[in-house]
Image 1 (cartoon, helix red, strand yellow):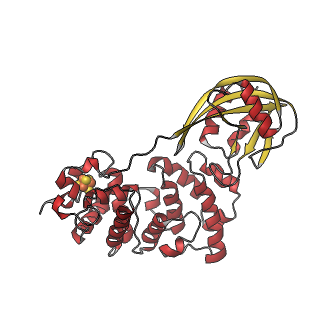
Image 2 (cartoon, rainbow, N blue to C red):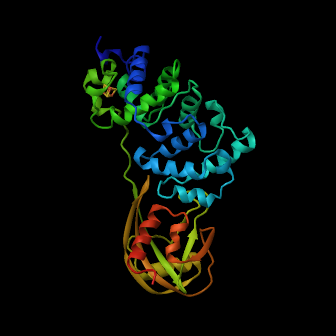
Image 3 (cartoon, rainbow, N blue to C red):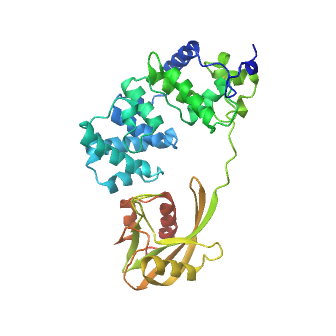
Length: 372
Ligand code: SF4
């Protein structure tokens, strides 16, 4: 029977079978990369790695994972840590709500679970920041529970294997993916099986043109038989990210620079940055900077000097920020939109948690003599 003639309710072929499961396990055990979090069964370490790996490449995660585990080796050390220290170790990894949730979840594990992570996916999902995917990963990898996982890599592999040709974001396709992942997780070594799917998606069944010749399940793959693997998974087109213009400044007083801290929740929550704000694209000059600083900090600034621009891509928007250096001439700090401020030596920004946009702006400000 042809692959296209075997489609199911959401446009896919037959369910993934036992032979596919065995082939995936054998391939994973022979081919898996030696990654730091694969050398441990410590549920805490696996939780940290899975949280860092969300939206972030393996190579980028490794040094952060090692530093984090060296500094906070147990749930207890994370629960009692200062949030600023946690955010400092996270700085540069992005999606800072992950770090804040880790800390809150560690506190909850200590308070409600005697310092030990629950071993069932359902209980894990009651912790802040742990969704269905992370719960499945921890339960299966650390505790060998038959819990399914579906992330971007797994979704791509299953969509191709099964020949799911409706948009991958659609509710029926998502439900089918979880159903198949659940079926696959039943049986021997659910943790290895889940990691096999992730590993195959990361290295063989890659986005764009997959490496089907190196694939252990190519004989059972609907998309390969149909010749449309590169076109799968089907996605609904994304809207272009919105562009936002902003100004920010290294504001100096007596050799110290003004640092302001964002509210604890929301985008870049709890991180420190240079004062500034969003502006109309046509109003990015010195007068506009002075008005933004006055409105948001209460300070009158003088000797304003433009230094250049930095760009940054967030998930749903691109930020174009014009960076200035100026002196605080008059006024007392009254913040609008930040939770607190400090006057610090310009090079002391290295010692407080800042996001990537701020780091880029500081490189420009300090590189251009902004500290003088
Ligand atoms: Fe992916 Fe190709 Fe393997 Fe199918 S045969 S699962 S498309 S790598």
